[in-house]
Length: 398
Image 1: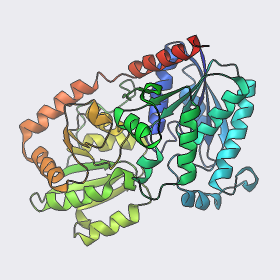
Image 2 (image 1 turned 90 degrees about the vertical axis):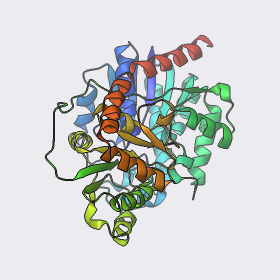
Image 3 (image 1 turned 45 degrees about the vertical axis):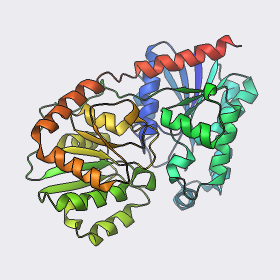
C-alpha cells in the first residue's frame, strides 16, 4: 500500500505534538509495510538534512517544499516571519497566498507520485489533499490534530482557516480525529456526520532514547512543570494563578514554564503582578534532550489546556514517571486513568491537587508507578493498525 502524506512539521523541527504524532505514526506504518511519501515544508534556518536522516532508517520518502508558515502561526506572526526570509520571491504575501503556494506545489508532486491513499495532517495541508484527490481521484483521509476553535479557544477565529477546515472535512472520504473530544467538536461546529469520523487516539514512543530511570537532579525545591506552547489554548495563565495558590501553602516550590508563544510576555508580567516572579522560571522552547531532562527533574507535570484535542505531553510525562495533572477539556483524559484531572478554569482544585502530589509521598509514588505501567500500553502500532483499517476500507470501496 502506498500513501501520499501531507504534513507541516516533523521532528526534530517541531513546534508541538503534531510533529511528534506524525513521526510516531509514520514510523509504525512503515514497519507494517506501508510505503509513505511525506510532503512537508521546511525553514531556511533549519538543517534540512535532519529530516532525511530522521526517516532514513524507515521506508518513508520525504519531499520538501520551502515555507515560512508554521503549524500554529497566526496571520500576524506569519507577516513578521516574512521580514526574515532570505528569498522573498518564493513566499506569498498573505496567509492565503502561502497556503495556496504550498497547495500548487503539492499538486505537482501528486502528479509525479504513485499512491493509493492521500493522508493529510491538519488545516494547512487540506487544500493540498483536495488538489491531489482532484488530480488522481484517490481517496482522501484528513487527520485532525486540532481545529481552529481549539487554537483560538473559540475567540477571534480566523474565518479563512475555519472555512478551509470545513471545506476539507466535507470533501474528505474519511476523517481521523485524535479523540472523541475532537470528534464531537467537528460534529457540532463543522456539521460532520458521526459515521464519517474515526477516532484514533495518539500514542507515545518508548523506543526512543531517554534518560535512565535512575537519573536524579539534586535540588532543594520541588518542581512543577508546564511544557507546551505559551498560548491561550494551553492555559498558561491558569497555571500561574494555580502556582500563586500553591505558594501560599508550600514555599519551596519552583514552577517551570517550558515553551514559547504569543502569551509569553503577558505570563511573565502576570507572574510579577502576582508576586511570584522569583518562583516561576521561563525556560523557552526546549530541544528534545532538554525536554527529557525537564520531565525527569519535575515532581509534578500540569497540562491545564483550555481545549486540547489530545495532549501527547501527558503521555510523555508519564513515560518518565512524572505524576500528572491534566485538564478535563482534553482528549488524553478520555484514555488515561492513572493521573489527576481537573477543569482548566478551576485553579482552586488544580492547586489542591498539585499540593497533594507534593505533600503526600504515597500518592506521588502510586501515580508515578501506575502511570508508567499504564502508558506502556500506548504503542504507535495501535493507531497505525487503525489507520490501515481506514485505508483498506476506502480502497475496497473503489
